[in-house]
Amino acid sequence: MEFSKSIKSKFPWFLAVAASLALSSANAAVVTSITQPLLTPSPDAIDSYLDDLGGGIETAESLTATADIDVLNISWWGSYDGTPSTDDFIVRVFADAAGSVGGLLYELASAPAMRSLTGVQDIFGEDVYAYSLDLANGALALEDGLSYWLSVVNVSNTGNNPVGWYWAESSVGDGANAYREPALSPDWIVDSPSIDLAYEITGVADDPDAVVPVPSTLLIMLLPLGALAMDRMRRGVRAIDFA
Image (cartoon, rainbow, N blue to C red; front, side, top):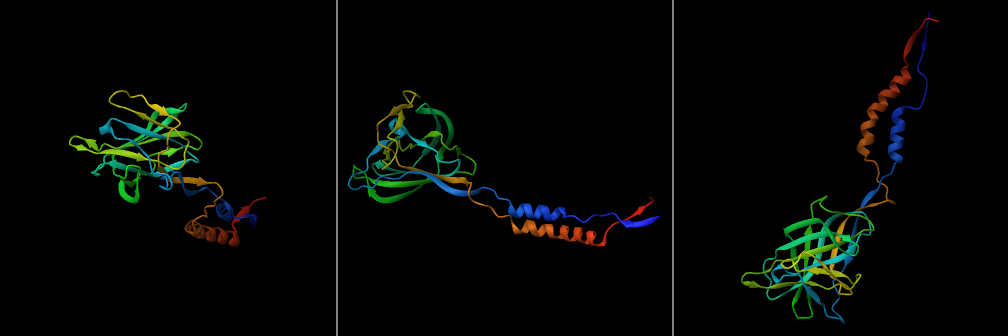
């Protein structure tokens, strides 16, 4: 009967795991946006479309996603026919249906949009405002290459407050928008060629070229296991050989 070392020298498992983690990469989230900016009012004046349920009209603007985007913010621009009061926006995003407005994908009533003056005026001499709405994480996702329709209708022209809201013009776009008169019909009418309406959709998308480093804390957590394994290898495991 003899005693012999039965453990073989080999590359420890924890080193393989650590190396794999250190060399692995993943897609990093980058900020991206789909933008139709407000028209610069020179030499052309900013035009706008009535977009107020109090006035009986809801307007939607077409857009195409340029990446898989988790939307975090929607911004737009507009003006009022009269002194602005408290806004009551309804924000909706619809799918595209062969170039027309399709099924509803997202809706937020009484959207808490932040309003601020831009310092420019529209074709009627009314002040143009910028609006910004933050969305809850995961509330709306757009798919790369697909077309959608964005509606940001206001409800300011109601009761004894005859103030209509108008969605302001953009300097770029595909020349198509749509409108409907909800009190008369739920059907959308595509208006093309037409002016493009100003908006910006901002969110996060995966960047396939970016590398996410492994958190150093994870590698630190592996060190005690590595030390234990190395100590066991150094001392060896004795087994009884009856051969």
